[in-house]
Length: 192
Ligand SMILES: [Fe+2]
Ligand SMILES: [Fe+2]
Image (cartoon, rainbow, N blue to C red):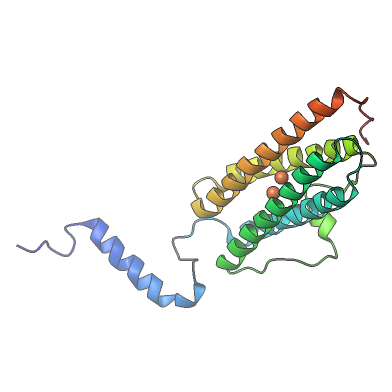
């Protein structure tokens, strides 16, 4: 015997989901079931995008400016990080468009939107220190975004979690570089 129409609430939910999906088809990935505050999520993601762009630029500058006895291995690390920050920027920009927003690539106001600063080091050691500070800022702010999203937007949360894991690797790479180099030269004071 076929179940009555209301025998299974899950089935009727599926029908409702299908109906809404057709109704708002132009909303793309954003359905009525989207629980987060979309505008806030897009704004927060644009701040994360600015953070990644600033980090890309700073690492690229450091890659070209690295000189000294440890320069080659450190420069390789800077380049790898620069490329990964670029990938993060792309992942975030893509998610912004999925949410119906516009990724903000405007150079004007980039530093205001970014969580981390653009501080260029004057020596190889201070470059690494400034990059580590920026990574730690990114780690803190991404952890906060993940907490904010909770279960309301699991896809965005997963993307930020993936990026966070990579930033933690970056921070660890830099910490171990500092440790290696600290044996050879005294650490310059960090800008306060
Ligand atoms: Fe990144
Ligand atoms: Fe990073």
